Length: 197
Image 1 (tube, rainbow, N blue to C red):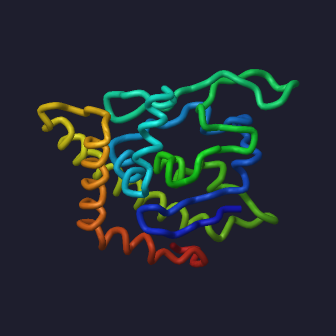
Image 2 (cartoon, one colour):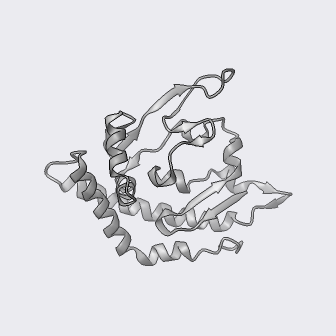
């Protein structure tokens, strides 16, 4: 069953299938997405600058060409389970960090199995609305990330990975959010109970 939590650019899509992922215990977390420029700006705008600096120092996050890569670890959650590589933030019950610290993709991505899941022989009524939210969020974040990538590339000093740079990304994210109010309002206007989205 899909649950759509509408909250503009912070919208979340959740599925009960994730807890029983047909791809294995780590599911999508086997290959975590990077925190791209937009994700970093979003995290800072939600009060996470200190957390990002702590995670950089702990080497759970490392600079990458498009933002920050999440460290992968090899471990098992149960004594009898095989060791597997997965996101450093994945635990026995899923993600161990709050939604406001995750990559946006982690909050809005659902695999095709989740969208196609049948409930009592019927399609999940939230599936169509969730697909629409997913498409709108992906388009919005992709555009914002292209704009932020250009802005980062234009900085003579490049990414410095200090508080000032993170604050700049947070301010840029907030600017992009304000400039995209109509698109964000379209996400919030999705009717989760309307099968036509």
